[in-house]
Length: 330
Ligand code: NAP
Ligand code: GDD
Image (cartoon, rainbow, N blue to C red; front, side, top):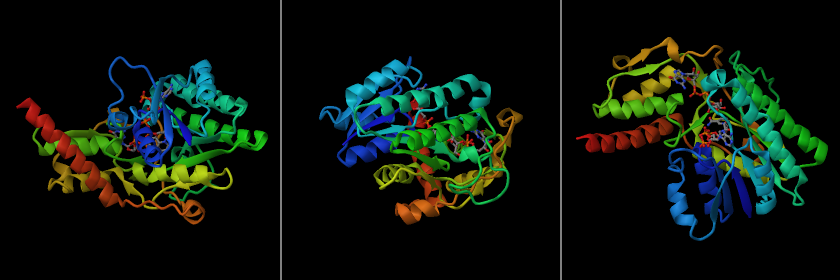
């Protein structure tokens, strides 16, 4: 089996490519040109699988539709996983045009290339719980209404609906995975969980003194990214193309996540966390709680990692990184 992952260098790109390579797939991954190295997450996979020709990387960009079409025709994958997005919600308010271009035109380029291929290719679109808008404390499933609150969320609704349109109009195997927040030691450092656990490691090691956050009262349903990529793969193996929610079914506030993280190293959250308007958003998603009954029943998928285990995995990893950092500085 051949999979194409657009793109492979992000958090989910790492966990998904690892899963597929371990399953014996040939993995083809898009990377973007950058002025500095951007393959740090996948380097262990490159050293293990590139020499066996099981992992191949290609420069591209979702906005370069000619290169996307050429690569689909060259690789002829069995499955395409579209993970590409300007995925930071706060940044999407600052860069609405770019966020929207990647999330709309970029996704159509990919859908068109898949549709026009002579091969029957399965397509996965990374949809998001952010599309719901989180206006009240209801449990959200595949039937719940979307009320997007940011340029990011609007572009995700567009891509979600377009994926459905291609599925229904052209009989394509095209699925939307509506994933609630999922985190890991490979999470980008500007998302709140990783920002917190990185700071906890560094404060514990004495190389940082304070942590500045924004809204502490937002609720999120946080799971572990390693569990969620298994759900993505299961959706692509199901007998029919459908839309699926992946979530833990538990929601806690940013403040509770931060408290747990500081407690994990014996520190008191109140002694180190301050808040600043700088990190508030023009429009906030207050409450997200997912109901993944459909995936649990029809895909036999369930998250294996509890919130306390997630905190512990992330804090341990960031504490180790801070120790190395501390040694280098001495
Ligand atoms: P991530 O680490 O930010 O990865 C997003 C990837 O998109 C990055 O590798 C980035 O490339 C790439 N990208 C950005 N602009 C691009 C462009 N113009 N062309 C091609 N690639 C581009 O995010 P993630 O957490 O792995 O999330 C993966 C996907 O799932 C995203 O679409 C995200 O919106 C969606 N999602 C995430 C969550 C979550 O909680 N993690 C939940 C629901 C949905 P670089 O590596 O070069 O920057
Ligand atoms: N990033 C960030 N930084 N968020 C903060 C901070 C801070 O300093 N302080 C408080 N927050 C709050 C945000 O206002 C938000 O309510 C919550 O923490 C989570 O923010 P993020 O970690 O940035 O994630 P997100 O929920 O906005 O978006 C993530 O999850 C979506 C799925 O629901 C991203 O991964 C999206 O790409 C994904 O679709």
